[in-house]
Image (cartoon, rainbow, N blue to C red; front, side):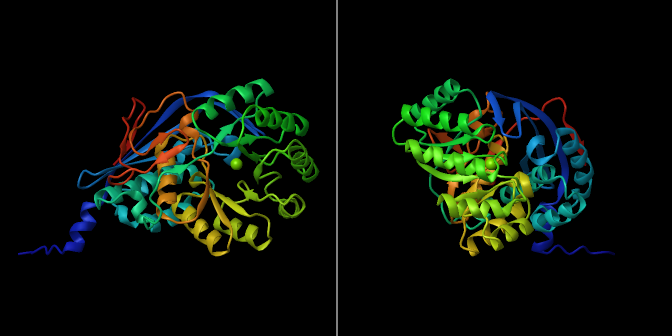
Length: 378
Ligand SMILES: [Mg+2]
């Protein structure tokens, strides 16, 4: 006779074993075309992921490829999800960190695809242990937080009209997409500055400026009295010399975004004195590596900002969990759900003007329904 002994540990392992992974494409129209120096989008072509555990617990994740920034397309994401999902069946969701490392090795060029699976694993795990996701990262900073709002590259009139609408809703920090045309960029910021009192700017070049153009841009904004609190990724990602020079010459803090797509990148940026801030985005690295980059950044004495691609409240909820869980996120750029024409997610964190309100409840505490294009791996 065989007797099967069940220890509490074994029970936990079985309970949080992944038994099913579903994923499906979702198109969400963007209210105003999202134009940045390197490209434009009018529809967010994302993918939602749902993981079901042995005990029935479900967790959600999202992949938000932005081809012009990260090089991933939805098709390549879907293909990667099919490949990686099969390796996670039978795995304990609590092993998300180990599996994140395995997936990074198996699919290094597909961080957005990996991010969807990682987020769903982490959400399912935190729900099965009945803690909010932010508690996994320490639960150190639980309070409403203010986000900036992004103004895409647009005509002067459209830039002012968009900024006015957001201002009326309480937004005061405007992240202006720039980097295509220095003179026009300065004119757009000047018009917004004169239209709206008490605001400040982030200038996000998305690698579009040369060093000289960025210096001219900073001088132009200074000339009309604009408050520029941050210059984000002004030049191409590898030009760390120019990033360091721009910090020195302008006295304005510089944030590295596209320059940091891995922990190794972050260490290089830090070592070369190329930035004051590192912009953490889970779509660039996956969640676990994002946490490692954030810790490394803080330990080196640099500051953190957090942003995203064009994401719904699933991926952005995961990013907000890092803000609430870890200390030290100084600038939040968690606005993209507000730029979408619809919100396909129920529950989760909420927006109150420019503020994000923390949620209570397990995991991300949100749900969404699969559509007819769902694919299932089990
Ligand atoms: Mg950016």
